[in-house]
Amino acid sequence: QLCPCLLAAPTRPPPTHPFAVSLYLSSDCKDYLCCRVFVPCMMVLHSILSDINPYAYAGVGCGITIGLSVLGAAWGIWITGASLLGAAVKAPRIRSKNLISVIFCEAVAIYGIIMAIIFSQKFSDVGSDVTADPKNFYSGISIFSSGVTVGFCNLWCGVCVGVIGAACALAGAQRGELFVKILIIEIFGSALGLFGVIIGIITSASAKFAS
Image (cartoon, rainbow, N blue to C red; front, side, top):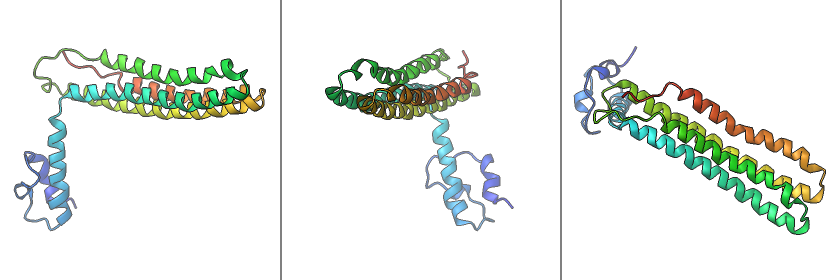
């Protein structure tokens, strides 16, 4: 049986302050956590999130996309670059061919740039009343969630490629025939970022701010 507070909550206006809970409690409910914690907190959270401009969701999504992608690329280049330079002291022959590991890390940042451009193309001038159309909220949250997905996938993809690239440099310095074998592993690691890009494109395909 559902709590009376939960049944009546959707019909009541959201509270403007967390302590204004007495107006939203049911006299038939004896559940302390439900009445004093769950229902008021959910109402306040809904009120806060619904007051955020949809353009803010979309803008933060674009920022997370490029920010985390660049962070992943920089982290990967940092890891593989340090190992590459260190190993090249003893084996200068690896300097040229192992630069492909740095290129794979840089590709992660390119994924983020491409997705941020795609997301920004979905923006349009809707005037001052941006919250009038519910589709704008869907578009904003869709771009935000897609940006989080792409950003975190590229972040860990960059770290993965960086670690494998560092191992490739160290192994190649000792035994040159290991380069191609580890390079295949690195290619599979770099494909992880493409998974996030594909999901980001699919989840934001129908997002478009109403003009």
